[in-house]
Image 1: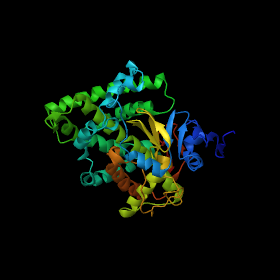
Image 2 (image 1 turned 30 degrees about the vertical axis):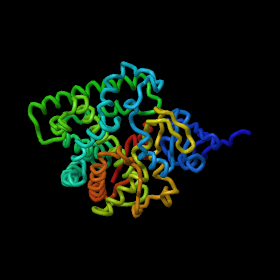
Image 3 (image 1 turned 30 degrees about the horizontal axis):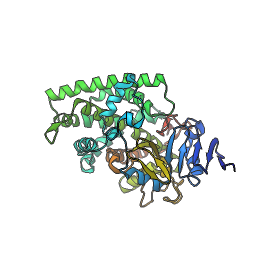
Image 4 (image 1 turned 120 degrees about the vertical axis):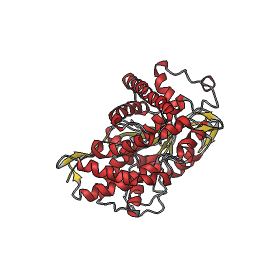
Length: 416
């Protein structure tokens, strides 16, 4: 008998074989890029776990499944600490990609304990809430200064406000000169291209060139901090000792690259998506507890990261699916955050939700290190924006960029 095929009315190109749990959906289809939630809503009740043909791995779309798998230690961001490439049947990596891969190997996001525990422990103290809260006056001053610089009548909020706030804060925390902001942005955007669907040789070459430039730039700063320590996070990484051992230069540079990239890339999207949602719903954030609730709902409602991948660290069966060690899975954070089984009226923007257990920042040992900083940046900056510009409105229809697994706008043109 022919397996039933589901087609979403809002996305005619999508086909789901519900019986065999297989999805045919191009993640670069513009209809999906502009509104992935319609596809999630069509697929989730039929197959909360499904094999995404274009990606070639199993994905999970329910809140229960995503939340559990983020915490399941049988899956990790890295697998080569428990098996060789030969044992997994993986080919050797393209040597042309080595500069990019070298930075990945030094990043805490792509390693597992004990290396992850060591790296995260050194950095975590700079991002705990009591340390981050001290930055509120700096965020407020920066927000006011940026608004003062807006051109008369109309602005693209992404480069004028959403980008410089997180970029400036993370650069200042690390001790990276903020005048290098344009370089940091260019390098970050080039490197992020490696994680998007359908990358090509041009994207890879740009990422390699950016990795080489980024590593050289930070390598010079690391050498400088060894000669002249300062009160910044980069100095802490250079001078820190764990069990009598110091971080390698590769670990220091890889961690710094991760913090600079992750410290602004997702937050830019979170601010842009959040402002878009507020303008569409008419909600205006008031300073304090209301702003905090608005930010949590904005992160749930339109998360900046939609797909987070992990590897099976052992042979196992999960949800009736047999996985071999090294198999990749995809956790659809954006789909989990709109799951009606966990959130009443999931497509409605309701700041009063309590509790609001969204997974926009992930969970488990790889929970976003910068979550307290990202939250504070939004809680402080968004009320200032709407207070200073009470007539804020769209000057052009917003469109999302073709950058899935990230979910962020191409531009956000506003008038007042």
